[in-house]
Amino acid sequence: MEESNEADSLDGAFPKTGPGSATWSAARKTLLEKLAQHVKSVDLDDVSLSQAIQWFEESSGVKVNVWWSSLRKEGIDPETPIYGIHLKDVENGTALARILDNASEIAPTSFSVWNDQVVVSPSVAGVHAVFVRRYDIRPILAKASGANARAATAIIAAVRRTIDRSSWESSGRFGKISEKDGWLTVQQTAENHDDLANLVNAWVDAGAPRQAEP
Image (tube, rainbow, N blue to C red; front, top):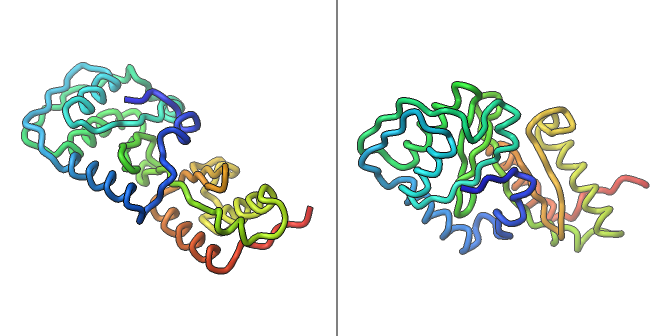
C-alpha cells in the first residue's frame, strides 16, 4: 500500500502510456483478472483501514495507491476503524468495496482502476469516483505556434472551459489538471474523462485551441 498523496504519486505511479497502448491494456487486463478472482473468506473486525488494505494487498496481489491526503480532508485516515466484515467466497473487488463501504460511514470512499494499480480516493458527492488519466498532447503542441508553455496554458484553459466547467478546483470542486513535458495529468470523473479524450483527439486532428493574447 502506498501511503502517498495524489500530488506526490502521479509521476511515479502512472506510466506514460494511455488507453489503447499494449502496455496499458495488458496491465489493466491482469489487474481486472485479479480483482475478479475469489477469496475464500474475509474476516475483518476491529482493525484499522490501513491494516484492512494491507490484508487486501497481500491476499489479492493487487497494488493499492491510497490518496491519504484527500481522505484526511473527509475525516478518514489510516487508523479509521473497520468493523464486522465477514464474507465467504467473494471476488477480490467485492472485498475491497466492502472495506471502503465500511469506511464510508464517515465519508463516501471508492476505488478506481488505473493501469496496474487500484486508486482509493473520496467519492465525488458520494456517488461518482474520480481518478487520474494522462493525455499525450505533444502532437498538439507540435502544431501550435509560439512557445510550448504558452500553448499548454491555452490548452488547460480550454479544457476547463469545455469540460464540465463547474467541476474544477478553481470552483472548489474535485477536478485537477496540470501539464509536464507534453503530458496532461487530469483528475476527473469517468464521464468527464470520456469527454476529454474526445476533445484531445479532436485537437490532435485539428490543432491546438486558439491561444489567449498576452
